[in-house]
Amino acid sequence: MSSETGPVAVDPTLRRRIEPHEFEVFFDPRELRKETCLLYEINWGGRHSVWRHTSQNTSNHVEVNFLEKFTTERYFRPSTRCSITWFLSWSPCGECSRAITEFLSLHPYVTLFIYIARLYHHTDHRNRQGLRDLISSGVTIQIMTEQEYCYCWRNFVNYPPSNEAYWPRYPHLWVKLYVLELYCIILGLPPCLKILRRKQPQLTFFTITLQTCHYQRIPPHLLWATGLK
View 1: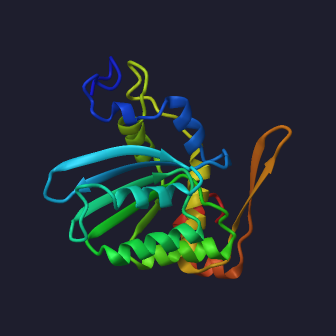
View 2: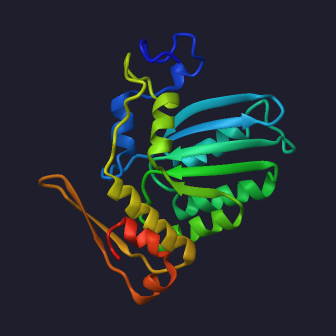
C-alpha cells in the first residue's frame, strides 16, 4: 500500500472501502448518530485469504444483515473454520447479541472478535446482559483504541494520497470512559457513565457517578486513567 498514492489501484478491497468523512462521523465516540457502520474481515481457515467489506443498517440492524449474508456465502459450511473481526460504530443491542449468540452456538468453528467505538444505550439492562452473554459464549469485545482506528483507516478507508499515516485522533478521555463502562458491564456493576446531548449547539457531555461497588471491584488503573482516583 503506497503512502504517496493512497490505496493501490489493484487493491481488491478498494471498492468496498468507505470515504474518510464517513469514517470520521461514524466512528467518532462523541457523535451519537443513529446509524451503525460495520467494517469487517473474515479470515478463512486453511485458505490463507482475508475478505474485507463494509456494511450499514438497512431495515435490519447491521449485525443481522451480516449473519444473513455470511451464512449464504458459497465458501461457508457448518464445519468451516474461520475467524471474524468486526469494527462497529455501536455495540450490539440485546436482540442482536442474542442472534449472534445463537449463530455461534450453531457454528462452533467460528470465532468472533468485536471492537466498538461506542456503547449502544448502555444503561439498558437488556443491552448490558446481551454483551455479557456474548462474552460468555467466547466473543472478545473491546473498545476501539488508537491501534484499531489506525488499522481501520489503512484497511477500510479510501484515504487521500499521502494520507496513509493520517487518521482522526479522537479525545483519549472518551475512549477511556467507554473502556471503564464496558468493564462495569462485564462485571455486572451498575452503570457509572451518563451521556447527554444538547441539540443547540450540538454538544455531547458526560457525567460519572461511582458507587462503593465500583471502587471495590474496578481496578485502580482504570480509574486513574480517567482521573477519577
